[in-house]
Length: 386
Length: 208
Image (cartoon, rainbow over all chains, first blue to last red; front, side, top):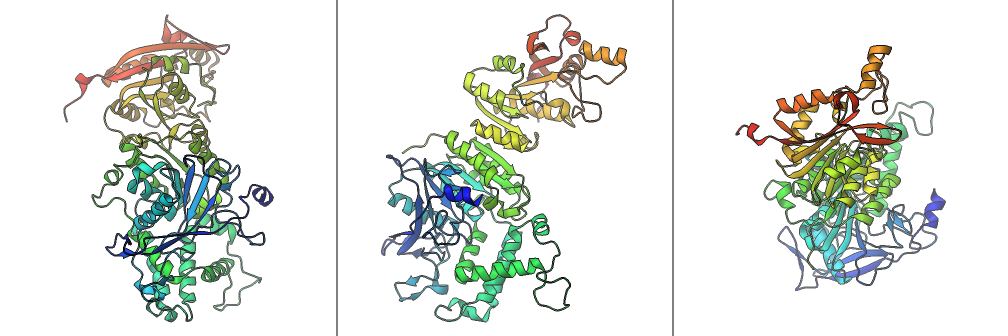
C-alpha cells in the first residue's frame, strides 16, 4: 500500500505564506476584538485551471496543519496528514483539481496564533491573543481564497473541526461554495465534547510551567499538554478499535510489576502520543482551538439549525462514522435533516467502520469512492450568482 | 431486493410526469432513480439502508440518504414531493401501513409495487405440493425470507380503500423468460406483480 501511495504522491511541496489585515485594516473577530496583521501558512497541490473553477479547500482538524499532502523534502519521514486522499488519481485528484490547505488562525504551524510575535509589543501574544472562533478561521481563509484570485470554490471539505469549517463556509459565503463535504462533523459541540476539551485545558493550565500562558522562552507546559492529548486521543478511538489494537496486553513484559509505572500497552501508546504531540504543538494553541470548537454552535442565534442554513446554496455530501462516539452519526443526521428541510441537495453516508472518530483519516477507500463521484457529478443546489 | 434493473421499472418510469420531484424509499443501487433522472428529467432522491448500494447511488450522481426508510420522511412537509416510490419494499417492513401513510402524506402521489401472493403458481404450490411457495419474484425459503408482510392484489386494494387512498392507476404484470407483460384478465390470479399509483383521497383527511 505504501508503495502505491508513494507513486501517487503530489511529490515535493512548498510551505507558503500570505499576510493580510495589516493595521488599520484588521480582521474583525466574533469576540468583538480584531486581529492584524495575520499570516496564513498554506500549501497548494495541483494546478488551477484558467477560470480557477477547480479549487478545493481542505480544512484541517484540531491538531492538523497546512501540510496535507506530499513531503517538504525527500527525507521527510512522513507525508502530509491526508496524503492518502490527496494526489494524482486519489479522492482529491490533483491531476484535475487544485487542492488548497491552510493552517487555521490560532494555530502554531505558521499561521498567526498565540505563539506568534505581537508587533505591538515585539513579544509573543501568549494569553493576550484574542479568542478566535470557527467563523473567524473561515473569514481568514476567505482572505486567502480572494488573494489567490478564486471567485468560487468547487468544494470545501474537512473532518472533525475541519468539518465544522466546511459547514461554516457555505453559511458565511454562500456564493463561494459549490459543494461541501463535512466528515465526522457536528453543527454544534455537545456537552460531552466540551467536557473533554475542558479536562484537556485544565491539564495544561494546572501545569506550573504554563505560567498563565506566558511561558515562551522558558520551559513549556509539556506535562499538561501531553495529558490533554492523551484525553483527546481516547475520544478519537472506539472501544472496539482500542480493544483490537491493545487489549489488556502489557508492554514489553509478561507479568505485571504491581506498581504505577506505565505497564499496559494502551497506557504506553497514549504516553507516546502525548510525548510526540508536545514536540510539535503549542499548549496555548491547544487552549484557543479547543475553545473555538466549544463555541461552535450553528443553531444560534435562533436555536434552529435550518434557519442558520437558510442562505446556503451548496450541494452536500455528509459523511459520518458508525463507531464515532465523539461526533456520533445522529449529529450528522441533524445537519442532513436541516439541509433537506431547506430543499437542498444532500447525500448522507455512514461509513461502517470500527475506527471511531479517527476513521476520517483512515477509511480511505470508502471515502474516496464517495468523494470522487460527488466531485464528478455534484452540482450546487441553487444557482450561484457571481 | 435484487440489484438488477427490474422489468417493472419501465412501467413505473412511464407513470411519472416529466420534471417531477421524486423520492424513492429503498432505492437500492439507484437504477430506477437514474432512469427517471435521464428519461423524465426528474429531480430525484433516494433512501437506502445498504452502504454498498449508497456508494453505487453516489457513483451514479444521485442524492441519497443512508438510513432506515421511515427515518428520512420526517424532514418532508405534507405533499412536498410529486411522487414517493416504494418498489417491492413494503412486504419487508414491520409496519408497512405506517410507511404507506407517511408516503401518502409526503407525496402528492405514491407509486407502490408489490409481489402478488395471489398469483396462481403460488396458490398451486401451497395447494398441490403443500410447500411454502417460491417463485422468481419471491425466491426465498421460509426461514430466510425478508418478506414478512406479503399481500395479494385484492388485499392491497382493500387496504387502500379502507385508508382513504385512491388508486389512480394499476398495472398488473407477469414475468417469464426475462420478459414482462401486462395482465388484463383475472390479475389477482394471473399477475405476479402489481404497480399501484395512489393519492390521498382529500375528502378523507380529517381537519386537524
